[in-house]
Image 1 (tube, helix red, strand yellow):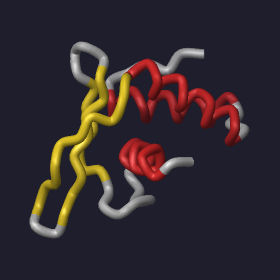
Image 2 (cartoon, one colour):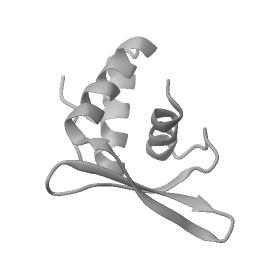
Image 3 (cartoon, helix red, strand yellow):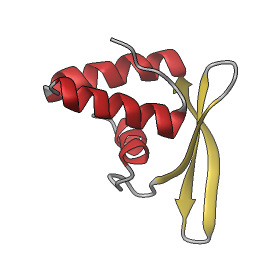
Length: 90
């Protein structure tokens, strides 16, 4: 997994996997993913992190690779919906 994907997953799961960690992650109305890291003095820079469609596909693949069962997948989907406002489907 890339450090960027680790930061995204950390944000979704509310766990720190990278330094700096993401403190904000937003899906824009036009389908882009924008993140902001936390730094020592507060908030870091806002960075374009890819597209919503790519993120959705990568999160599905991650769930498959992790071998999530039906209940775990449902909980993961709900977490993504709550934290990012997107539906994974599948």
